[in-house]
Amino acid sequence: MTFKILISDKIFEDGIKILQEKGYQVTTAWNVPKAELSKIIADYDVLIVRSATKVKGELLANAKNLKVIARVGEGLDNVDFQKANEMGIKVVNTPHVSYMSVAELALGYIIALARNIVQGTISMREGKWEKEQFMGNEINGKTLGIIGCGYIGRTVERFAIQMGMKVIAVEECVHDRFVPLDEMLPQADFITIHVPLSPLTKYMISTKEFEKMKNGVMIVDCSRGGVINQEALYQALVSGKVKAAALDVFEEEPPKNSKLLTLANVIATPHIGAQTEEAQLKASVQIANRVIEVLEKQ
Image (cartoon, rainbow, N blue to C red; front, side):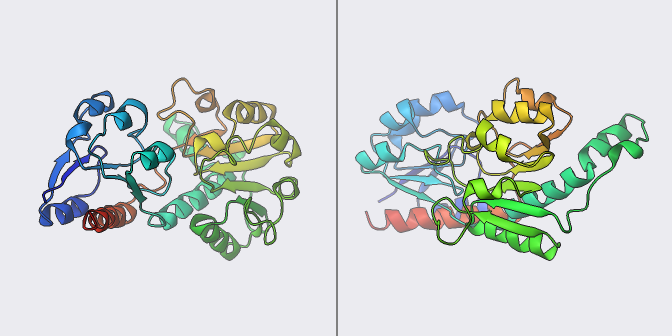
């Protein structure tokens, strides 16, 4: 049987070739407006997405023949997993392929915050030489609080220890091995977040949590935007409670009129944690093999 596969978010050609070599009919549709996907989805057996396509609502309701939703990446918050399960659609993803890329970005952010690298670059481009203004801090000897200790969090921990940092880890689901969040917050000079977005983690960092933090703490978020209450973060940054923040994720992506992006003590990237050649190559190959594995059982 020839299965029809729709790829709505761009992936590396390596994965596409694997699917084509199996004889599947592959349609690349990342240039199709997302609102139009619901009009064509009924023709396909498999939908391959990254984070841009929201597999919910009308799109999922119209997926009458869909057998597999394949999410290239680790999180599944853009997929209505419960509805897909009710429809008998298998949902697969690519766990752990990008953990090194995300961990390296988080570490880079910690250093960039400590040493004002982004602000210094902007200043230089404006023709300024503000050496005294960009007094930084060493990260050696500082305390890093890590929220979430899966593959990414553990890799950040290893990097941080090698650079002389003290690490305090918080894992909301494993209370016997890690300190509670409330115990970590007052001790950390830097905090980095590596948890999925779920009802448990939604707004887990908000006004109450900011009040418990050290004055001048620096925060890195390479997880999901909804883990931090962005209005509460904005207020903490304006007041100086949080000295600086580095954000790779936003509650709305791309963000529209985000107040956070108006602040000089915020640096940001457009959700590029997994956006490396190495991670995307591995992810495309792994998702192709996951799809084949499911289809061959049909």
